[in-house]
Length: 185
Image (cartoon, rainbow, N blue to C red; front, side, top):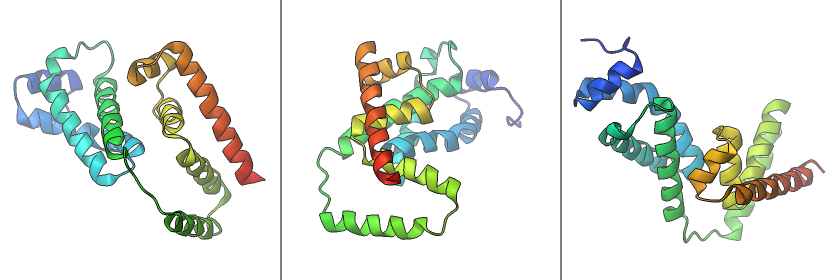
């Protein structure tokens, strides 16, 4: 039985019944997007793969809690984001980076920029500046601008109040502006 042409709601019903072919089809449809979400947060390929796998396992085991108020993809993405944030916090509690390593990476980045076209340079500079931001600033900017979450969703994901969310977003944008001004100066 081919499940590739089935709509997602039909597949989810089959998944709830334990149909492994349906689960595989759902996995195949969403794996790339969910890996990219996890990768943007964890910054590590192996961790992103682990988070993605765990997120699918969680989603399939908790399908009964999916009420259909949002799309399945949005519901799954929320699981991936939460798992990614948890994993990122765990793995980055104690990270020591030598000054020599930072200097080498900066020289490599600058050498590679000369060969690229201007639009890629702007995107790279923006992402590079975001990487230099404090974790909380980088996370909120990524979730808002790259993942597309609104302020209410950010409050829920990050477990902060609406006013704290607005303040954090404002400070993150200002910090990014300063970093970008330093790069272009």
